[in-house]
Length: 186
Length: 222
Image 1 (cartoon, helix red, strand yellow):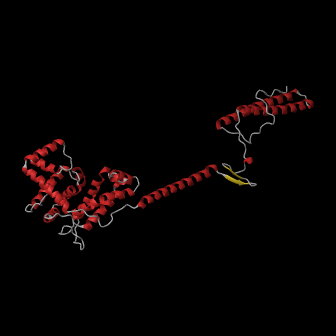
Image 2 (cartoon, rainbow over the protein chains, first blue to last red):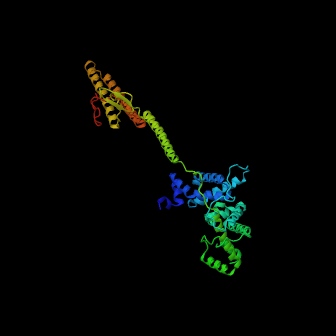
């Protein structure tokens, strides 16, 4: 393990603020994949996810001095991304030719297990149809493992409200999956 | 723990944020309530299905990387600012030195000399020395003695050619008046020295043979 891998987000942020811009490369390298995939699942659009990721990273760099809890860099970065996504969602849009949806059948080539493919695709479709508030918290919880206090920062919402939202989202997904055969062996 | 608490704690179960007592209650309710047991199982299934059905992928373009030159540019910017401020301060200090010290540069017989605070050569400058009260008194006495000596000589010549006592008495009276005037002049001079801190220079002629302060003129013609 190299020294850069052992340095915490807080140490890297302090280095950037101290004038060592190269340290921000390590923060980008550490969080870009998670950020991009969060936005990809949230938007269902690769180009938009890339644009929003780029913008979120750029803004986090430019506003790094505003970060109070330096150890919460990831939560702060995801919060910027969520705000960008929400702003983008409010913007009226025209359908763009060439944008690649990721919700359709065969959009991914993940390690599917036999007998679960239909249920997996149904579940993804159900997540895509959740309200944005519910989708945000399901993705943050399931794919990125954020705790409720971190999600409260990212989504700018009390943790108790987020627990309630997650319960409702879970019940929606569960209800949507009724009628599907449960995967064998899971 | 009721069913509502249990379902809220489902999502915290894996994050290890539950206390020991909460975990104990959670496990007890899990054993007793089949409905909540199903809910926990379904949530674990949904999580697992979502993770396997929606694998992460790498972004297709490199993301934002802060320019390394930005640091260098900032460094250069600081240096430029510092140099600019330093040169301005140096220029101002140089002007101040020229105004205050008025240096004069002379080159004479392979010798370069720089002098400050004067426009002419040092030999031409009048020497200014402080004058003490004792000196002023001594010079006044010397002047008085000079006057007395002149008058004594004059009275001696008069006594050879003209021996009338009336004329001699008149001379003595005039000398007394002149002596009083000299004393007044001396006192006035010293007051000026004290009040204005004057330095007597070329205007005051030092007597060729100064006398001591106790050597008052004693030769008064009778």
